[in-house]
Image (cartoon, rainbow, N blue to C red; front, side):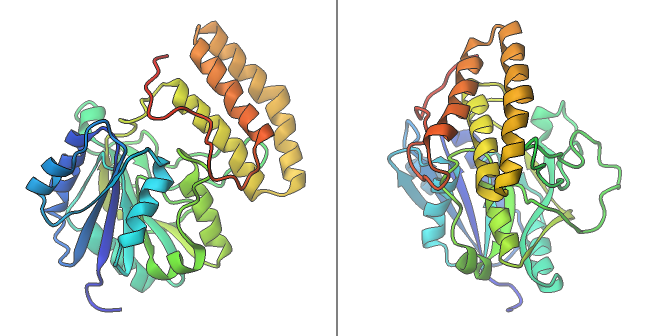
Length: 316
């Protein structure tokens, strides 16, 4: 590996030009000497190409006329990426100087490293001004019965408890680096999900190919989180529940899937419907039912017809 291999930084914009510009500004202070920036616009209402390229003329800009989802947008960037490493970051993130150096270095140190994420902080703008409130410091395995897992460090103040790189089942889609070697063996992001769970499914494929997933808390990034979808929207309810089931269908055994269906039918569905009904969130009720129903009528390998009208903003 050369001393400073080319890193392709890929990010997707969807109606968030201000956040995207702030992300691009932060990349100017990365300190890493050899990277390219690829920005994919995922069918925004207004084409941001002119303001982006006038301020950042070296950016490689791709415009899609339709919203291709998280994986679809990133895969457009992959098509033109030339880097030995590919670093996927959300457009609502801002990097900390030294981040890229640190992650690239780990590929030299850790044998069979497949993907790695930095320590992810909530951006101070969504954390009441706090600069060290953790969003992601790794994760636990997704439980085969409940389809859920835990995010390590979530909501903790970083007081130095996260110090060394650790193995983790999943990287975080808001900031994850992979190598060209892994991409060629595993292929691009799975487009079955459209929104949420695609990086988790991708990590399963990476592990199945014999690679490891890591979190490196020395490298840090700030995340404004869920600007495009909203923190509480029927669309989020739809895709989280649709894709939780889809993930289990694609990555667990038939016996484990049976257990998950029993949990879903007798615990998860009644609990969620009761919760949404008590709160009067009828849009969420419809979205929840629709997400479950999608899995009954669609093959687990299906890569189109995600079942939700996009782009669309729906209030709760």
